[in-house]
Image (cartoon, rainbow, N blue to C red; front, side, top):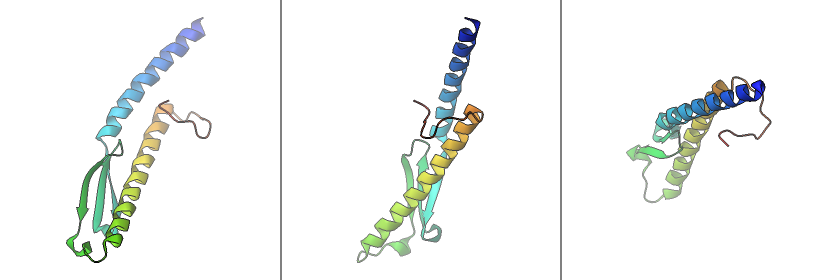
Length: 107
């Protein structure tokens, strides 16, 4: 029974750390770029778009498709950075715990 008590204590500590990490990630901001930094998309740790900055030279009413593609590219760049930051924080939290491939925390 002592081991079960220790396991429960560790689970509670992990849960508290997870809550702290989620709060930290919500405050995190990452910026993705396209067109050599002329188009920027900023996301928070919840992958919500917080800001979009577009250089005026990219705005061409006759070629909207290019601008749409650049927005997608900048968003995907920011999303990749945010996900990498989350994975890094999760690795710190789990202390190098070898979780099975595809296993995601929080549950």
